[in-house]
Image: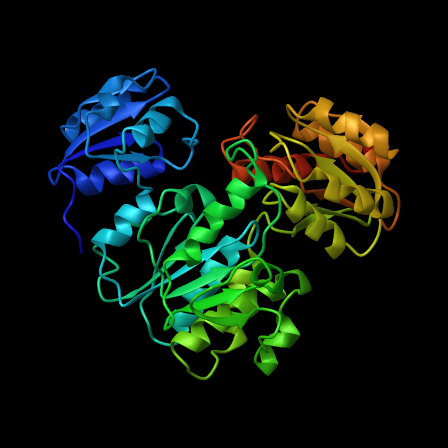
Amino acid sequence: MTDLPRRITILGLGRTGRALVETLSGKAQLFLSESRSLSPEERAFLEEHNVPYEEGGHSPACLEAELLVPSPGVPPHTPVVAEAVRRRIPVWSEIELAWRLASPAFTVAITGTNGKSTTTELVGAILRAWGQEPVVAGNIGRPAIGTVDAAAGKPWVLEVSSFQLLWTERFRPEAAVWLNFAPDHLDYHPNLAHYFAAKANLLRRQREEDLAVLGREILSQVAPRARVRLIEETELPGDWRKGVPEHLGCNLRAAWAACSALLPHDPPPFSALEPILRQPHRLERVGEIRGIPFVNDSKGTNAHATCAALRAMPGPVVLILGGRHKRGGYAALEPLLREKVRACVLIGESQGFFAALLQAWDVPYLLASDPDDALRKAYELAQPGDTVLLSPACASFDQFRDYAHRGEAFKQAFWRLAQEGPAVP
């Protein structure tokens, strides 16, 4: 537990900003700065907590603080953040602040370009099956700062993103899991090295007695002080091997490596983990129309994830692709698109970007205006033995609230298409 700075500026009133206000109001002098216009409900929320605020931009008032806490969506090049760094005003992520305030039994932190949420949930499920009471939080949806009290004396399992790791100074999990690394978030990070360095903060403060669970490719680029367990060399318990989908084997091995090293016990039954391995929006089979399966992989928000989804498909694919692209990593798609994709249906604001790539790669494509249009065109392009796959390789924020909203929209479009039956060619 650490003493709070007396004056704290919070940048952004999203999910993290709200949790910060709820946890810190009355314990420090807070100031909330939001770049957009606040809703009446948001203003009422801040007034209820006696938090002064500004909206429509970040003014110099933000810098009249002893600590700046940017929400994860506030990039490091935001002028007020850059000025705080120049003035040597501490900038901490919510994860850093929460870790300083919390007193868990131990902390497991999971990062990676893909698979973080599934692995985080698996760690929680294994610990629960062993009779523990883990508190699962972080980038997975429940801000860590809102679980500080609940985590006291319990295992604290945190999904951590590069946005959160970037602004850490002392954050030190007893077990750090780094699954993989591929180009992503280059709309936030200025370059790939910056993105990697942010991720590497996960390991930076660990000690020899701590644990680092890493993929072999990650280990070739870092030199952890902690003892290392390689994901690829982790043997799964016998009955687990039969039930785990191939594309989730890495996640389960990583979770087992972390848990079995921290609290060695006999493995729980696979049935305790199976619900986690059947998550919506991650290679979720929605249904079939005339023998053509439709798969929802809306959680595929970067090229690395979409490559994994394509490899998991047994035959040719009609791929629904697009959204808000992340400025990098898409070259990795070319060989798989050429090998496995019959055609693409492009959605969202990145249509022009992908159209240029697909023309250069000689991959056929059509443009679609909305989920119904995209599914109809994909179905018309599909042939027997094909799969229609939504795996956009992009963020969803151009048209949807998040990837789950996008996935649900496409599932609803599927049911509407299925109800048309024979009217669809």
